Image 1 (tube, rainbow, N blue to C red):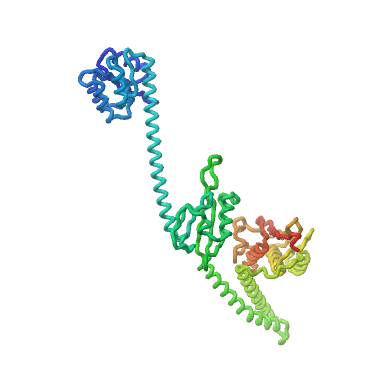
Image 2 (tube, rainbow, N blue to C red):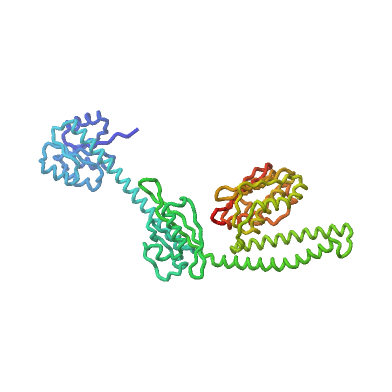
Length: 496
């Protein structure tokens, strides 16, 4: 329940005080009475008052002296002058000293109540404005504090930070940005981004963000060269308030990171892998040839146990050669050298050949291996790459169908694309494993496929090869019901 407003009535006439008290009490005001200014000051020190009704001519302390004394102490309380003895000049003088209004005696009750209500409303609005002002000041202080914290954090970052506005002007940057861009002099914000960034790809990305061609939460990562250094630039839209929509793109935030040491480490790693792989492949091939000579009996007949050992050794060597082959392909993929001989490839003939080669192995596991081709058009690709994709996918489908079933390969033309789909009815892949299947050395775990050997690089290579040919690869799978891998490769008419 709202408290009743308290009215302090200061008047030396007892009859007027009592009459006014009855009137204001009926209006549901709390009324406090004082016969002169001195008593009123004492009451103010002990009571909370919302409005003061003040007579001017009183003994001990008159209204003018009271107003002069109380105004500095209680500036928020509106004072209404109610007198029949003061002149208009005195009333005006009192109002210049802070009185809210002037009413002459005899008092019109309706006018008195209306004036009090207006004074209360004025007091309420002033208090609300004061609270809003205090809240605004507090918010501004908090914002300024957070801004200072953010500036301190940004300036201490080792990575370069650059914020651009809708006009592609740099409005915020840190010292690391100048260091990474090899800028010797401090720049004055705002400055157009083209004055400090010379990489056209990054400039185009910032323009795309500003034009709204990217999603609000999208991060765009790209590599740029600055002299002899390699930097990774990660850009994202910066949102700001807009009168038409809640948020709108107001610019972009770009973080620059020096990845030169990592690139050098990758190069060293790739060189090491290439060197080790090449050095291992030659002796392994030689050992396999020797084992092949023994297995074929060209060096003399072998006993059954000896024959088994030699054949097991050849299988292990084949596994090592497969691993070496995959490692070399991974190194080439990282260097962008895997796509070496793009020519028109007849995928239909290639699929038929691979299916024919793998059919005996499929039958041995009780698998029905079939294929179909429809409206196929040659794709411009590296034949060896295409063969590796198809072999990997079909081999995986057979490997992960230990209880038999169906493995189906379909290929069909779809306008400017060719779609290849390899589906099986095998063990499938659990939902939590699906995001990981394209990671290097990752292999799907299932009790029924523990005997399956492999490097874990097959699907990683498939994805890399497909993307190198500007295609896409998608996987759908249901545990214990099978897996479906779909590849789409561009096959435009004018590319042939």
